[in-house]
Amino acid sequence: MEWELVNIFTYNLAMCELLSIHGHITPSLAFQCNEWNTFVQESYFDNNYNNYIKWWDAEVVPLIEELNDKIYDTQR
Image 1 (cartoon, rainbow, N blue to C red):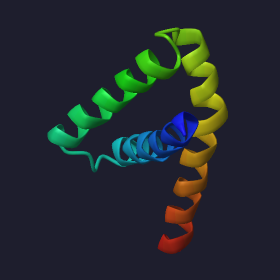
Image 2: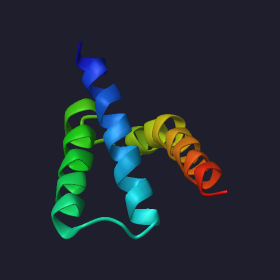
Image 3: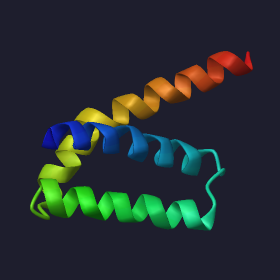
Image 4: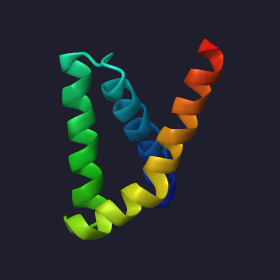
């Protein structure tokens, strides 16, 4: 159950990053994204930045790339 929540946060964080990349993030959403980011790092990775970054690179980055590809495909 606990890692299912991390999976949900993975999608949320990927969407936050994608909105930020394209300049479509509002200040309130940016604040919420930062809160999610901090929560996941502290709660699931015991505030271990290196483990968090490894997880980010393995889980969030591929999702960002997949979503970004879908955006570009729909714009063509």
